[in-house]
Each structure stands twice: as C-alpha cells, then as structure tokens.
Length: 249
Image 1 (cartoon, rainbow, N blue to C red):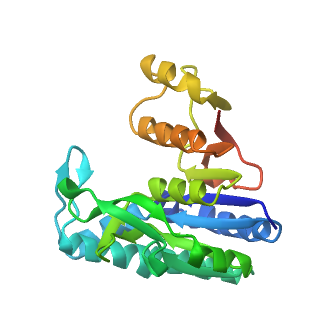
Image 2: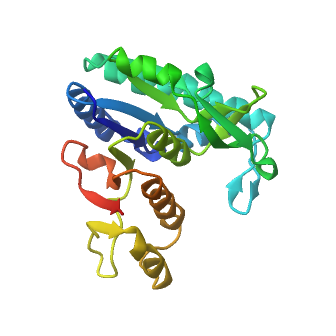
C-alpha cells in the first residue's frame, strides 16, 4: 500500500458519538486498502477540563494563551483522553491503531510562539517513528502536541500539525473533517472545488469569512508545497464518499 491519506479529525466532532463511531468504522475499512495517518485536536475536552480544574483562560488576539497549568490540561485532554478514545475505537473496529503525539520520537519539532506561551509552530517533521509504524501496517493516531529542540512540550494547532505531516510524507490527500460541510457560496451552496488562484478573490468578496479564512489559507499552502488535493468536509457525513470542498492547484 503506497497511497497515503492524512486525516484531521476536528475536536468538535468528538462531542458527537454517532458521528465519531461512524467515522472510526469507515476509517478502519479504508485503512485496509491504503495507509492512513490520523491527527486530532480536542478543543471541547480541553475546555471541559479547564473548567473542572477552575483554570481561567486568557486570550491574545482571540488565541488562547497556554501557561504551564493550561499546558498540563491540554496534554491530559489530548493524550490522556481523546487519543485513547480514538485509538481504542479503531482497535475495536479491527484497525491496527497506535496512539502517539507529535513529541514522541521527536516526530514533530516546533518553535515556540512566545506571545502565546507554550504554543508551538511546526518547523520539522522527523519521519522515522511514523514511517516505522506505517511500514509495519499500523495506523498512527497523533495528538497535536509537540516539543521544541530542547524538549519543551508545546501545544500545537491540529490543522497546522496535520498539514505539516501531510507535506513531509508527500500524502496523496489531506482531509480536514469538521462540523461544517465545506465552503459555501453566497447562495448557501457548497463550492465543490476551489483553485488556489481563486482564494484571494473569494476572501475579498466575503464568500470566505471568519475562521474559514486561516483554514483555507493553510490548505492553499499545503497545495503549494506539493499536495495534490486538500479537502474540507463534514465529519458527520462520513469519509468513504467525501462530500465537501476540495482545494487544488
């Protein structure tokens, strides 16, 4: 199996057991015929634990500042809960899933975004550990945590981590599964395909707005770096027959 797909499972989908179970069943079937790397975040779980431990978040330009206490909660939520749930679900469905994070085996090296605290931006993907897993027919399930060159643990945006891994492994496809069905035009119809040269005009005429802007720009960067196609799709609809928006060159 030479074809590789990287899938990013959106944190909000972890709150929908029905969608999650359907996704894990389908991903197991797909993993029998092609290589899969699953990357995940876990925003809702992080928020729930922060509330449980009475830790108040502060935000810088709309982005969460990750102090030492928050980082501990992030790692507990992602590696201790979400990763375990996804990995166990895949195993129950028959997949050879292995749960890790970006810090394991120094798989993802990041630089600190200092104004956000213990938040990292990926700068290098070391393929060795993930390669070993894939070549041994395992399905890596990767939590969005990494470390800098000195081994300091960092919280990493899961979208960015998935894109970095997909580019490093020259994946045929990168799929962002979210709680929206793709990019919509002004008539509320899904735009099935977007060329990267069209993105700026779609932003200027406000077809693409809000949180979709950085996601689309990230998709475009991944395509520019060699990916053939990047999908934004609704996780609840499943992954066997993707319905959403594909970004191409």
